[in-house]
Structure formats: C-alpha cells, structure tokens
Amino acid sequence: MAKTKAPGTALTKWEQRLSDLAKQSKKAVAGVGTGGNFISCRGGNLAYQGQIIPGNKMKVIVVDWVLENQCYPPGGFDEENPQSPFCYAFGRLKEEMRPDPEQVPEPVNETCTGCPNNQWGSAETGRGKACAEVARLALVAEGDFEEIEKANEVYFKVPVTSMKFWAGFVRELEQTYHRPPLAFVTEISLKPQKELPGWHVEFALVQPLEEADQFEAVMALHDKIAEKIAFPYPKFEEPANGKPAPKAAKTAPVARRAVAKPVTAKPVAAKKAASVPKF
Image (tube, rainbow, N blue to C red; front, side, top):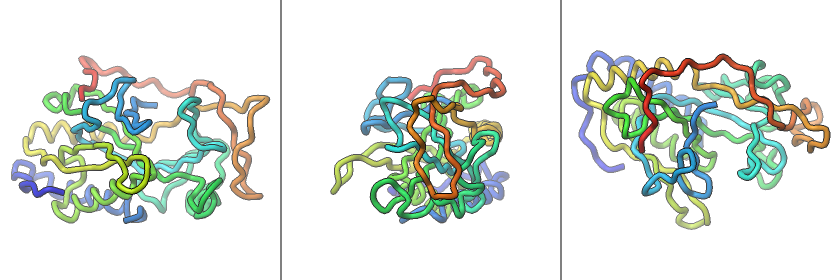
C-alpha cells in the first residue's frame, strides 16, 4: 500500500470507538488466510445494474461489513440461473456464526463451527470447502461522498478467492492507523491473476476521512446499516423435478433446492430525496 498521510485531528472524539471497531474488524478476519443492491464482478468486470463501472475500479467508503458462509447446490453458483444458497450464515466473528432459523429453516448444521460442509475436502472437487467463506460489504459510492446522509448504500460480495486481500487490508488499517475501513476512502478494483487465469479483487487506501461533518454522516449510516446488513436471500421451495442438494454428511439434513418464491419480510421504508449510487 502506498504511503498516505495520517488521519487528521477532527475526529478525536471518535478515536476510542474507531479503535474498538478496528479491533473487531481485525478479529473477524483472524481466521482468513495470508436483498440489497449488489455490485457484480462476474466475468472479471465490475458492474452495477448491468452497467460496467469505468476502469474496473471504484472509490467507496465501506460503511459496514460482515462475514458470510454460503453453500450452493451441486455445481455452485450458476450465473445463468441465479439462485439462493440453501444454507448460509452471517456474523461479525467466525466462531460465533450460525444459520438464522428464520432465514434457513433446515440448516446443514446448527453452527458453522463443526459443520461438515465447512471442513477442508468437503467440496465437490479439489480439497476446498463445500461452504464458501466470503464477506458482504456495504458501500457508499464516490458520487455520494458530499451527501452521505442521502446516499443509497450498495453491497458487494468479496469472493472466497479474494478474501485474503480483504483480510490483509483490514489488518493493515488496524495495525497502522487503529481504525476500521469506514474511516477511509477505499479503492476496490479487479486485477488479472499474475500466474493463473482469472482475476481477483484488490483493496487500496485512497485517503482518510478528515471532515467532521462527513464522518458524522458515515457513523450515522453505519449504525443504520449494522441493523440490516445481514438481510436474507430470497426463499425458495424445492421443485417436483429438482435435483437434490449436495450431501454434506450422512447425518446432515436434506437442503432444499431453489425455485422462485419471494421472501416475506418487512418492507424497508424508502429514503426521502435518496440518490442513485454514482461511481
């Protein structure tokens, strides 16, 4: 990461909470190796609502984030036939993660720790895990930095193959500045792999937030999003001719397969004068 000036003194009163959030973020990625509006990175291209984001990079503020474990039917996630994972969980700390019974009525295991799908070698092929360990990030786009209080947050899922880059970024912010990602402007970009075919996501510090009014708005938005960031995937029912879900273990419950049925959830009140995210 390129050198950047240290954060200013305008945020002094927030120092303790920033330090606490930074430690929480660092602890959340401790085990990671060295519906909302989602930004897609399919095919190695950053896109929002079907529109390619110029330069395959974006400047954002990561106002909140959570760990996510997700397990899809045989073959994994299908870009041509999107469906929800049949078992998933969100959490701030890896060791505390468990499927929410209201979101996942028939989990493979009551807790992620000890789940057969969360063991190395459980994947259909290779030595990986059947359950992917990713992260859900809530972002404010660069075009909304001046009016954060009116911004519509968007979401981005860090792929399992890029989690080590996110974990490294979070650790560096905490160790160097003792602050979590929400205290900075971050550049998220997609880069081609150097040795293998494909791509990965990289994170770079652009600058710290220094304006007190801007930071007040970020913290207010963080508190709101923290209550809803673990929103569920759409619920589905098993079709009569559906394929069975992958078998995690002989004692694991049968997971249900996806056929569209909208989830019943509390409607989220629309924001007044809300803006469309601008990248």
